Image (cartoon, rainbow, N blue to C red; front, side, top):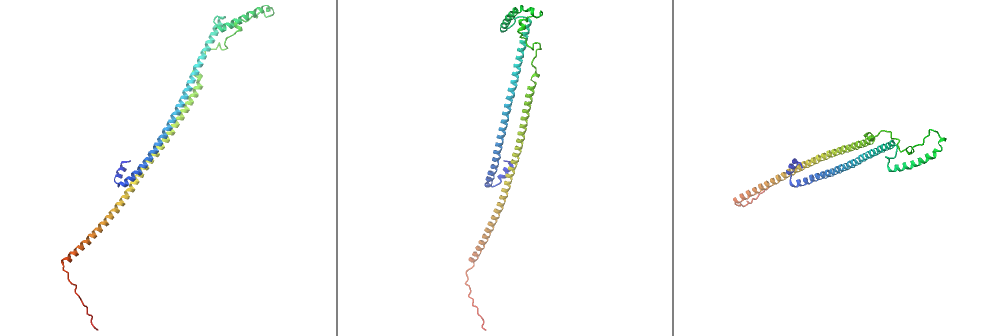
Length: 272
């Protein structure tokens, strides 16, 4: 309670002080309860906002991790593809099966046998064919080259993920803007509620001051009535004292003078 109000309260009678203290305490307790509830609501809102922010950060972190994993996987696949193409180039350039892996060696052997048999059966028919015709070699029959063998080696760059990165950045920007708007809205609501609470506090102070003024007026009226009653009582006491003094004086006079017989007077009426 304000010091000025406290000092004014101490000048009032105890009974009026008790009533006023009860009223003012009730107002302050009501205001305190409202403020506590408001602070609890604000804390809950901020807690929910922080939880939403954490969830969104987790989602963005998982998305970024997924994008990084995809980039690494793509880079690994590209590296493997480049290695396979280089190996096939070396195998094709070597002209034999010396550098092939075991499975391809087995295929090469089978195809070579088939090609040899086909060549043997075709020798008897060479006269019927174009003299410039040549039987394809085993490597030509089993062409394991890649259609992209002659393409230059391609490495993954940031531009390959520009669309995904732009989408994530746009999403993060939208979420950040949304969170900023929510914070501004909550700050505005908090400011408005604080202003309302300050106004209510001022109203409470004004009510308490008004109560004190009313109590002071009542006290003044009671004091005036009390003074009037006391004055009347004093006047009555003075009047009684004066009557008593006159009576005492009369009694004293009577004691000082002896008793005298009252003369008997006969009134004679004249005769006509």
